[in-house]
Length: 464
Image 1 (cartoon, rainbow, N blue to C red):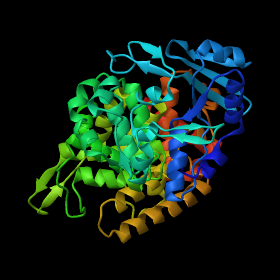
Image 2: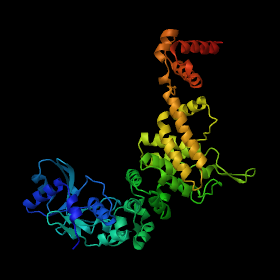
Image 3: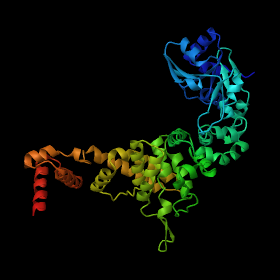
Image 4: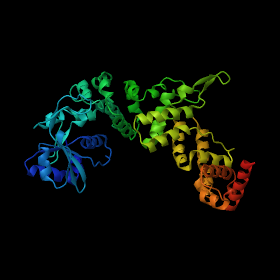
């Protein structure tokens, strides 16, 4: 029998209390799902496990029975046998052992029926590594589908017949791709063969669920593994066909990979921050549509691919229901990811660049651009040196109090109207933006008296 000491020690006190309370009322229970899987995986690999607070419990008790046993319970999914128990340490999903009928909508079972055997409940789960249960009170693992063996062999295998599991819930093919990256496993051959025949079910999956899987994937050490599966087996053709234009698109001599290969390496080089990693994946999406052969240089050029890429990224992110803030940040990162700094840049040039990208975005651009440089697969020490030079130069300019927006000006719209007797209107904003342009070139102008004089001059020129 397997030593469960590490797993036993990982069980939160709340889960033990919950299991004990169910047992007192004559019901059995098991901890199931990702928390059990991750603890076992951490033990096998000799690695620490990130503590989770989403422990799930399967029980023989019916949902209405669970609700009577605990003081604070939310009936989150009574129809499907699930309630959420609120305890001091968090909230815990407690689900009655169940079986399921067909999945007409490719997401939820048409009907759920309760069962008495934990093995029947585990049989409905997606992958064997997620079909392991742990009896907390008896300190006993239940693994009817050899999920532990699959974990040991770093293999992702569907429970039962893969095609049936994927047809039940179309998201499972995307979860398979995610697990390949986040759990660093390989697809079982039979499970892999079932992905493409299951794309009809995948097409029923909502954009929100797909977005959530993408964002979870970005936490992996190498999220590119998931996107390689998506590309190879047709998921991207359904979700993001724009990205497929990059596959096989030859680059210039500065790169060791095609556009798609470079995007994946840039993705992996970015830190595990979802917005940055999505930007890394999309940063060169405009290259295939801008690629042109230069007879002069005997090489490919990609002029304007940053603008084209930003125009392509926006609609893609909207389709996947990214938030407005996420979408705007990613589009801005794609639009401004090209930096051509060298030691010849003046302070005014750096100020103009910071005004265009904003100091807030600049900090993310430095990280993205470093990943872009390293992801080319060739030595670019000078590019990295130039990037570091820009960071230092920009930090000094910011520390000197340069203005990058109209709010940074020493005179606001109310002051202009009061001092110059101007009525409110669009012309006030236009005047402030013109003053900002002058201050960016000459920060010494950013004092109220000088700004007033400049404003008078600008107005007189317009009147003349």
